[in-house]
Length: 191
Image (cartoon, rainbow, N blue to C red; front, side):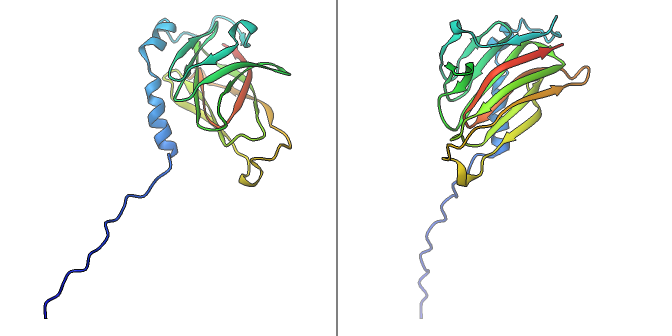
């Protein structure tokens, strides 16, 4: 009696979702020479407290994978566009999509204290917000999550101000934002 080997179907690779580690690997690409040039190659402390608002002359779309300089910071977009638009509360920096946004705000100087006023929209997916050190690595992170059952519920949105005070020699150089729709209305920077 001869045995015929059974045909075993090949095992297909499992689809996997992007993990936090994958996102951190992608964020390493923000060490861009053009950003360093706009920062004048320095990581000095800011000379005085400043407040970054988004003025009417800055309204418009910031295309994906571009660098957009402002007075006190540089906006570096990832795989998705960002936009500076008018709202009832004033002008805000926001994304063009409900999810998969990816944006870095790199300060022209380092600062010891940051205050960032943000608002999530009612239909946004989970948001990841991080403060970056002078090496542009995440130093402190915040995750804003909505229960899956209420993602399409138009019952309201979260409005809050995040404040972070860094220790001397560990000053902050920027903000990273990934994931869901977020509106950034004001950033206060204190040396």
